[in-house]
Length: 170
Image (cartoon, rainbow, N blue to C red; front, side, top):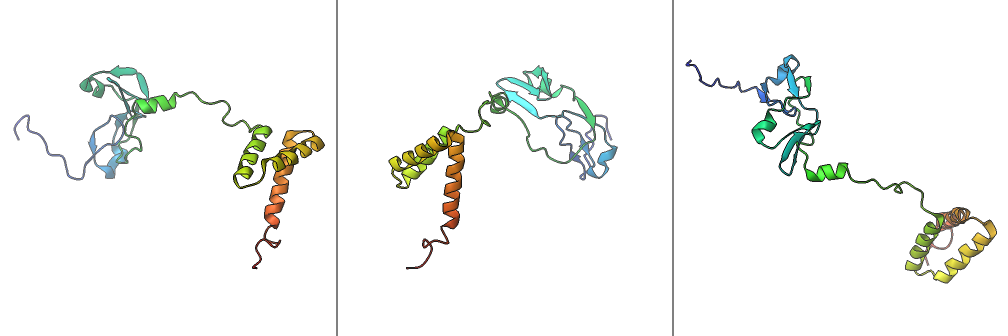
């Protein structure tokens, strides 16, 4: 064989799927390989290229990007990663502001307003609902107690609907 000839890759060898490794290896002997790779996928944002686990090492040229050394050592693998790369949308989603009120319980008044809206949409007169929750509010003195009582009343009606004449044949 002459110097500089390319040695053919054995057919059973596959390319490592760890980010940034790209070595060919025999998957039957993966535990005998040494793999220097990146923990997280590459990021391609505008003209910058970098590994998500090494954001301080950016490149603007493909060859320079491919020369960024891996940040961890392990064994080669033939298991494909779920996320192959990240882009601007991924970065924006990760750093998007989080709402502080997402998990705050809904105000009892808002719950009553939603209930009223639903009942009106199926034909219950709004005045009847307003009168009912108004009486309960005067009696119980706290809107959260009114909501609990309304919940109890509607649950009772719905659970007993099949025992009343609602579901009986004509």
